[in-house]
Length: 137
Image 1 (spheres, helix red, strand yellow):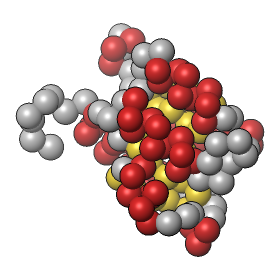
Image 2 (cartoon, one colour):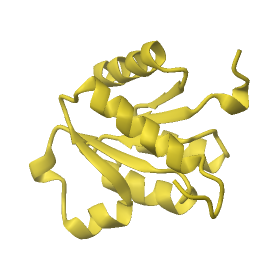
Image 3 (cartoon, one colour):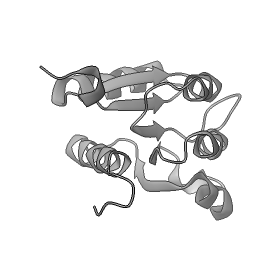
């Protein structure tokens, strides 16, 4: 049985409850990772600033109140060690490249996603976040 420290925590941020449910179900059914879901970037930032467990962050871009790029930039400032992914249905309206670069996402995927590709990208992010300091990939 895995201990709490062995379970990777995947932070999911999307304003669409059905998307969060589908992503959470995929992660729960296909991996031993814990899915931690948020419908608002501000709530995810509060979780991260309180030291909540996070091994990789997956965020939508177009959300009300706080867009995903703003969230990812602030998440990077709070937790630079946690890899960030963009999952968006609006690739052609994502904003300027400077903001995307400041968010520091290691991958961008479009909705609808391909399950195995998404899971592989999440696994890669977890591998990077858990690599010992100064260690090779």
